Amino acid sequence: MSGKLFVVGTPIGNLSDFSPRAIETLREVDFIAAEDTRVTIKLLNRFEISTPMVSYHKFNARDRGDEICGRIEKGESCAIVTDAGMPCISDPGEQLVRQCYDRGIDVCVVPGPTALASAIAVSGLPTGRFTFEGFLSVNKPGRKEHLISLLNEKRTMIFYEAPHKLAATLRDMHRCFGDRRISIVRELTKIHEQVIRTTLAEAVEKYADDSVKGEIVLIVEGAPEVVEKDSTLDDAINTARELMETGMSASEAARESAKITGFKKGDIYKGLL
Image 1 (cartoon, rainbow, N blue to C red):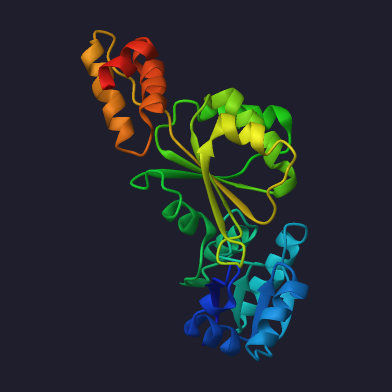
Image 2 (cartoon, helix red, strand yellow):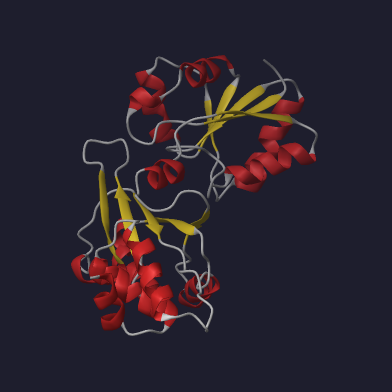
């Protein structure tokens, strides 16, 4: 094992998810590039891994990346890890991977748990097509621009969010997207793992006090399909029936179909009954 960068996934909560291959890799490389060495040392101690570490994070990524690449070019092997999950996903590790490729250094992956894939799998929302949007900007104009760019996105959307920003994010999403279904997935693989299936309007009201704690992934329903203007009431009723097949109540389906088709919710609801 020499002259190579290994991108190694680590547990997102439950240490039992750490793969034998990942453990073996971290034991055999010459050094480990860790986002926070104070966090990673706990993992290494748990699995009796004594490989030396260097810190690699967004504040030192460029200079430290050059150092790491230089050591690899001299024949050493390095594993990059993040505090939890797959490095290089919404993570400065992507810069190190680019630096390695630019310098002709081999890169390989040792897969591990990923919050975004795990969250959408248990969200109850459509999984056939989705888009990962990472963290929204803390800058209000940038945040607004990001959300507006997704207004007509039909795929299920995945966001990461910090608990202390959740209330503001839910309000911004509701203002931009209207009342769509959302799954708030928190503390994946940990003791208090929870999937909260609700709507944006209900979530804004219920979690205005930032009462949801822990690591959070938001799964938001994509924009509804637009029905042609010459659609009939029967088309609107059929649209509502299709929405009910996804788990909506008759009232919810009638409301969403009304938004899509322009027919009155009451007329659609009567047709459903």
